[in-house]
Amino acid sequence: PPSPAPTMPPAETLAGLPIVAARMSHTHPDGGKYAATNCIDGVVIASMCQTGCGRTRPWLEVDLGEPHRVEYVVMHNQQNNKASRLYEHELWIASEQGCTNATCGAEMCASSTGPGNARAARGAQATRCVGTGRFVTLLLPGGGRCLELHEISIYDLPVPRMPPPPPSAPLPPSSPPPSPPCAPPTHPPPPPPPPSPPSMILPSGRAELPRSDELSIYVLWRVSAAKWPSPAARSYGGHDWEPVPPLHYAIRCETGNCTTLIPPVAAGVFHRIDTYRSGSPATPQELASRFLAQATFGPTTEAVAALAAASSAETDLQITSWVHDQMLVTPTLQRAYFRRHANVRLATPLPTGGVRWACQRGSRWHRYAFTEADVGKKLVVLYDPVDVEYALIVDGIVRTNAAALASLGFGAGGNATRRRLLMSEMHTSSMGASRDAVHDEESAGYGTLAADFADEGLASFRICSSNEKVGADLLLEDWVAASGCGKGRRAFLPNPAINLTTSDPRITYSFAPDDVTLQAATRTDNPDVVLVESIRVACPVRTRFLLHGGVYYAHDPRLRTRDLSFQSAWLQPDSARAPSPIPSPSLGFRSGVVSP
Image (cartoon, rainbow, N blue to C red; front, side):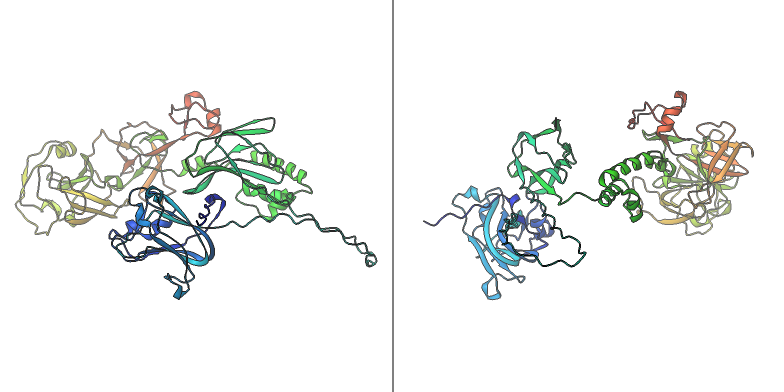
């Protein structure tokens, strides 16, 4: 009987070939869900490529990008009773795309009618397929076929490590040619670096780890055919082993001997130690360059020259001195930078910080009536026949008063309606004393966007967008209950400045000129935004509006971050610290300090 085909070596001992593209003879009715690229995405189980069933001679072709020597092909088949659909099949290697016969130069490197056991057809199917070419094609001959596959991988034999050449036989003695006068003595070239030892496979359980030397690095990997190898620990330069991300295996070292616990793994997964060896010790310049690459934003020629000394030992001392010098430099902290630039709009305190309330230094105020926080809310328009003006109300609070709203079809004197106008309780509380309902039988003839007049006001709109600047566009739509934007008629209203004819004293505070100092916000180009630079009186925490110099401003609550800097945590007295649920930084502070 013929000899059985040789068993494929473990995939990790072979050279996996890159696959840059894939295509199939037919497109599945579900389109991209079963695209050819699913079979080269590195995901063995979750995705699949399919041609659909009932096909004649369906095929899957993969492109290696350039000609390669091919030794093995692994097809990850289904794990159910449909696995037999893969057989019978043929594997072709060609230099041209779409070539699956000898006429165009292709070579059939393998064919199979399937294993004798149906269950053996499930999962990974490894086939020896020897040849050279750029395109490898899996072909199912005949009609009524279904090509369904999870993944396909192509392998070549690894490039063997060549052992060092044996020493040459000594030459017979002969008189050397005379050297020119004053010629420098000749020196033999340095010996080549020793070859790296082969990889070491570790079984599950407590494993002893080899110790590196001055010129080598050992890395412990967890290897799987379904994903990239993941590092777990390392040893370099003769140092003890240490955990590395992402696996962080625990290391136990005693008197220079290190061990780790190798966990149990599934089939096809194993642990391996690789060795990386340098041919000679690093020069002082190389030591300096490597250190600066790790400790700074990158080495420069000047920095390397300043750090490198005459010898490696002296360079190590220079590096130690450099580290001490850096520790004396005032740090630029990312956390401090974040505090200076964080400007999140906030209504309630968070673990990262509190709200900068109205009467605190640094609180933010604006002159425009509506903000981005109002998007999606209902805007109610009321008409006050006593003051002969309109009130624009959101969340039950009058944001501003206006004599006319021409873009919405409301002219001066309230001449936009011929229906009865009902003054709501909201209107009464915001505008002052109760007033009788009024009739306005005139019609201005506007093609108004205003909705039918309802009990809650003259008209209601949904705010769909808001530009935070006086005079910038405010996009409105007719209010439709339980509906979002894009459902009603639209209009644009210039974002008005705050102008309150009758303000609510519960939420409005009038400052004397010397009570508060306002300054323009330096980190924004918006002229309608100011910050409280200093304040010399106390105002209620609920203050919503500020009147200063005849100008109204609305409070814009923003994030007040907690100060967790080392200096403030040690130097501030306990009374200055605000209780905080923030986890302590590295030195274990009890709480954060609210930054000014």
